[in-house]
Image 1 (tube, rainbow, N blue to C red):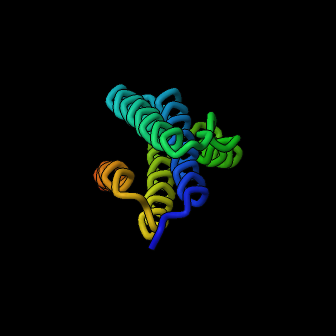
Image 2: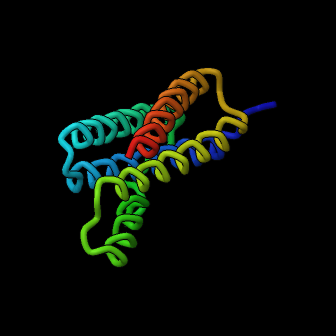
Image 3: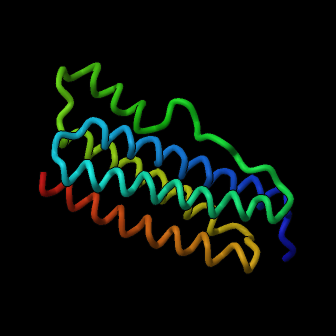
Length: 148
């Protein structure tokens, strides 16, 4: 089956938005956690998602599309943290970990949906590699949540 270029670009832009939201969300988490190890972890995740977005933007340009420049506003994690803040006076690291877990779950769902679509042979390895990294991150995040 032939790949519809416009649909492919839309799917890649959806992944870009997901990555940019996660980049912003993890940075927001890094800014709020008290534990220095968590801060470093979330900063690394933020940088990783920026790199993923950059890779995807390159693919969009390759197909003659215009890549998204920013994620959704406000980002998913920021909304979650704001929600928690409205209920709890001092947001602790446990609540931030839980929101990061939710953020990872949403990203996994988006990648799974896109991977079911008809992608071009050069895009598949990029998306699959990123998906595998997200799965590892999701498992690690779940481990943090259980340890907390």
